[in-house]
Length: 276
Image 1 (cartoon, rainbow, N blue to C red):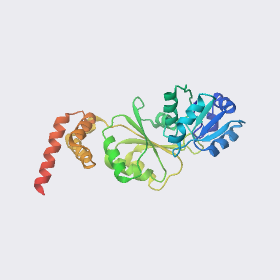
Image 2 (image 1 turned 180 degrees about the horizontal axis):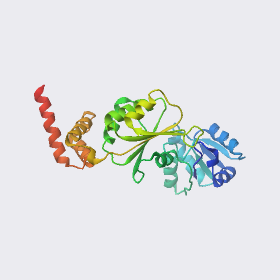
Image 3 (image 1 turned 180 degrees about the vertical axis):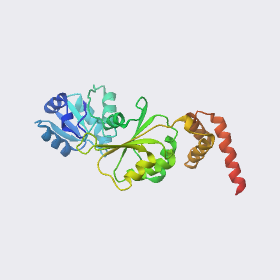
């Protein structure tokens, strides 16, 4: 059983969660110390066996935990929020499905949907991108690919990297793209700062603290002109994407012809070569 735990406010723990943790035979936790402290704060006494399941051991322990769940009640929790959403759990669920073990969920808090709901940015279609890559090249490549994404995008980010990430987002997505920095959700110092990417980059430059979820509006097809689209194609090819693939990807966001963008980008490449 997957069980969502509070992302900040302990009162968000449901009666069903408390009862399940109390009666569990095995609790598989991202950090057993964190989970034991949570149970203490919630006033939950349990005789469950605790098993650590985290990013570094999930691939080796997943099959065993899934097999154990066929025999006794196993509750899988992360440090906060819903397991398997940018946290350990996916491999355990996949193994359970493979072994024919029933998987159920205790729904509850999620930083992704909480930030999305409070952001004031369209929620009808969205994509969750997790943490941006730490390496600059990989990060730039991913953001270049996402620049034409029309759905709202949700990211997790470290307070130490948020200013840099916002600056790069403003550079690649455009300074005027609307976004929201959601900090310390459901906690005492919860704060949601809304504005353009440029404004938010300036705001975070002095430093921010706490756990952060970043919500960024999707691209609007009408906001791109042909020159922007060709530049975007060139940017993607510079990151290693094939020209045809880049043209098709940008055309989907631009609303234009992939063939036309391909030809225009090819023409500008030829012009640049002639100048050299």
